[in-house]
Image 1 (cartoon, rainbow, N blue to C red):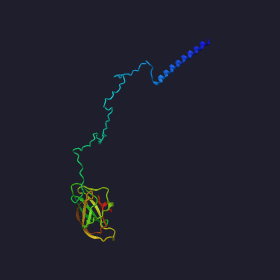
Image 2: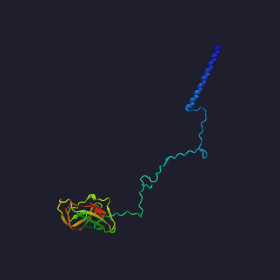
Image 3: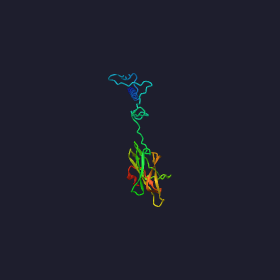
Image 4: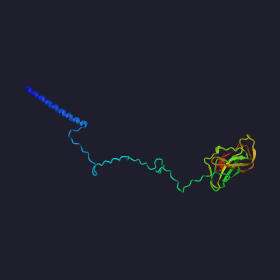
Length: 235
């Protein structure tokens, strides 16, 4: 009797172990992503024209999947017009003509006495041409054919070049003497006035008669061309 009972317990234990083994294997299959033998594959829905999810066609062989289109105005090598070429000038557009320098060919100069400041003269240039001209820098002065050019006062340089339309004038002040007693004043009768271009190169000289009893000691100066008399005589 006792032996039969022991056998019954052994059989039951064996059955329980087998059941536990099967359960463990099923869990391991799930964890590893495997499926039981004989299980049907899950069907993938086919693409449909209506109501389904349409998958994009695969690109053909040798065809790039994407194409980069340059943004307008940023074409490589371009300048904002999208074609990489410089804009052409319209047929009716012309470059603005450059303004020539005032020279003895298109202007005249004269020199005159002034009451104030003392020992000064006023030089005036007038545009006698038919077009606008620039009175560049300061005039080149030579008293009675002197070889040395008269000193120019740098502090008188204006903010912009003086532009003269036809008939308009520009002015320069001439200080005749330096400090008293430094040089013996010499009487002069004629004055050579040279005009210059934008590169400060001579463009010709005119000779004018000086006022009577004009003396200079070579230590004075001439100002840059000014647009009005007051600025020319303020130095």
